[in-house]
Length: 183
Image (cartoon, rainbow, N blue to C red; front, side, top):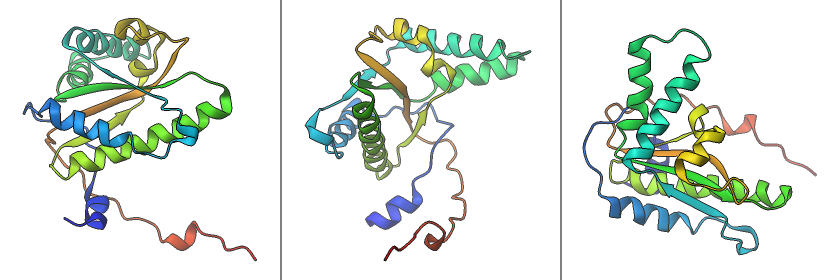
């Protein structure tokens, strides 16, 4: 598949099979992601591979946070748990703390790196989703993952796995709606 086709075909995947994805393949993707543009070579990334106990704790935290917003059926609670438990891998995404302007640049770097990793994995039919849902952004998540919030700012989690369903690509607007030419 050529690069343009790879870009156009990659989708955010929300449902995963229980198929295994080799850890080495994901590590290759993360290593490649470190080639993202990185202002002043600050190397701001912090990836935390979420193990089984932490994954279960995050799943329960997600259910707890969602139930605080109103009544939660057991079916919905199971769906929330499955969201954390079924991807082959979960990786918490963070950036090193620094001054606000640098953190803004570092977030952009993280965004680029997630796209690089996602594109790399997609060529092997491995899907990803960058989630910033409540459990990923909760103060308790730092404790669950053993991350010091004074040192690292969590920016969500990367779900990695074999897609159960690949969503259809929505129609894209024309480039002309987004480009302005100055004199």
